[in-house]
Structures are given as structure tokens and as C-alpha cells.
Image 1 (tube, rainbow, N blue to C red):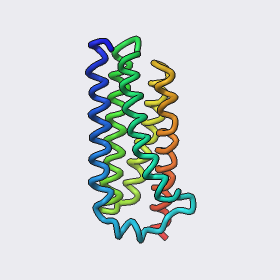
Image 2 (tube, one colour; image 1 turned 60 degrees about the vertical axis):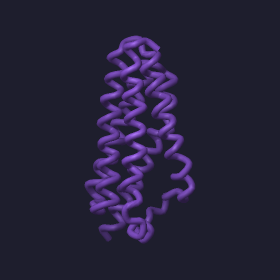
Image 3 (cartoon, rainbow, N blue to C red; image 1 turned 120 degrees about the vertical axis):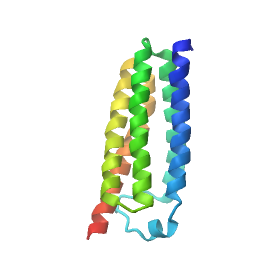
Length: 159
């Protein structure tokens, strides 16, 4: 890896670790509330969440480091890192809004922003280093499913 790729690669790894760590702080804040929440019909079983999130975090780190190491121009890795950072901020805002004050509408909006940014990240990565974009496809799909679930929770709670 060139010296120009080391800093964005480290940035991706640090962001993934922060994303994983901070999201778990809020998701466990009120388990009784979530257990009682009416779930959309398309909600996967709990084991799917337990499998998907570690795989997503791994894919994000691998794609970020790979993009940083292989991008022809350093600006490609830096641009992807900025998009990723904003998407992580939106996803963490969702986790806080959803699990702490139970603000389901604003939470769904934050997750929708994170999902759109994730698809943008995938496109940036694909253009720079195609295999890194391919690595992000499951995460982007998961973020889209999560957004639909978040909107579903909000709609069910409004009834």
C-alpha cells in the first residue's frame, strides 16, 4: 500500500470500529421496548441480524482498505471515506433516535439517508476498484432492507 493510501485505510477501519461500537451502545438501551414493538411482516428472524452485522462490518473494512490500497488516485479513497463517514453518522443517528427517544419517523429518515449514501459509496468504490464495490453489495442491500423495516415500524406505531 502506498503512503497515500495508509491514512484513508486507517480512517475506514477506525470508522467501522466506531460504527460497530457506538451502535451497540444504543441498541441495547431499552430491550423491553423493542421486544414489545410491533414488527413488519417482512422482518427477518433475530439470528439474521446477528449474522449480517458482523459480516457487514467486515465487508466495510475490507472494501475500505482495498479501495485505499488500490485506487489509482488518492482522491478516490478520500471521497469514499467522506461519503462513508456521513453515512455512518446518519446510521448512528438512526440507532440513537430509534432506540433511545423512540423517534421512529426521524430515525427512518436518517436510515434512508444512510442507505442512499451507501449506494453512492458502492458506486464510488466500483468505479475506483470494482471488486471493492462488489464487496459492498450485501451491505447496501441490507441497509435498504433495514430502511424498509424502519419505515415499517414507524407506520405500524402510527396506527
